[in-house]
Image (cartoon, rainbow, N blue to C red; front, side, top):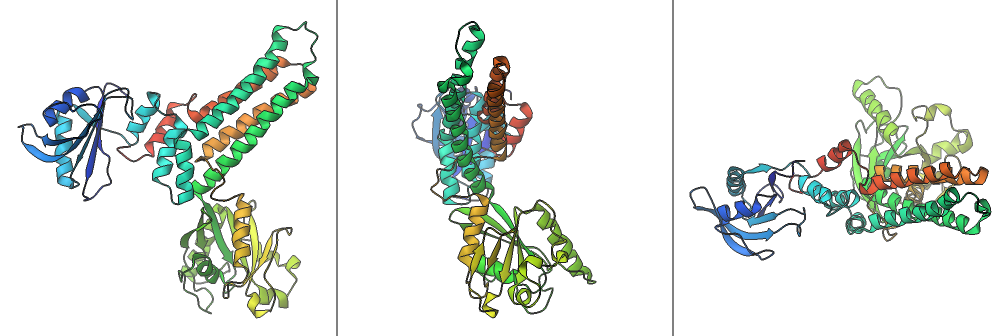
Length: 454
């Protein structure tokens, strides 16, 4: 990033609207503002102004706001122009600002400058994008918590705890002749226990936030006429899929999104898994297998009436599961219990877990919904979730692994230098979350996903 550049972008949504917002940030703002507004507005005072072209004629009229550095979002001089939302008008103002020495901002460059100028850390910057893209109230609340610094503060607290352990143990390195048994010292063990507890609570909150952000991809699979599309309709609460008695009715992938107490579920209905000669249905089966391989969980649907008349549930034919790749979690759903007179029930202890329900009557659907939340490790919308991403979970896992390695060294040897080094590596991994140790490639990946003007 070239901090000498002054950048400009439209910050409001594209299209026609009542208000269009243009944001400018950089060192040239105090010179640019008088040229387009006639004079520099008072800091943090909204002023009704005409937006002037190169000949001094008004191209629009609106509100101007000036935020001198460092008291601004980016930490630089910032000018915000709130005019009318027509595309032509906004383009005219943008063109004038480019003539005055601005350049168009890259995606996320305003937030990137805020990070580089110490106004926010990386976790807060990512929370901004998560808040904009939140698909539920629970996800928005989690993003606000992280944006306000709660995630970063808890990471900092965990790093402080690790520092305390390092200081305590490094005393053994500095004073090797002291007759202190660090291995059996209760205070050291208590400090380590507090660190592991901190990892547990922070990881749980971050995992909840990741679930709220990314959701759970659930693929409905099984043989034709088992009731896959009926289950999709029952869970979605609408007639999203065509349901007939003709095998092979569903030939393509059908998607619906729903929320279970704030948890986003990406529900995917697929073609029945069978060997077919029809080219169209064969393509549907191929796509079904492709979706199954990417699923977080597969609901494999079985006709409860057929299963009851044939082999027992524990002796289901292996051929029925040949399309399911290893490693994908599977739940067996025995549908159509209304035809057998059986009661809905859930067997979590079975491998794989089994639920007995009727998509037609709705009996047993609450059991399936609860199972999906439990299997994902989701608590509830008020669980104190923090907006987090996969990279945050990875950094937490590596940090915990380093601390566990240090604890193992402590229990087996007096190699305090190795113990301290593992703790340092753990702190380094935690620092990746907030951006203390961040590569240029990661910065480009994070801010490149932002919308322009943010």
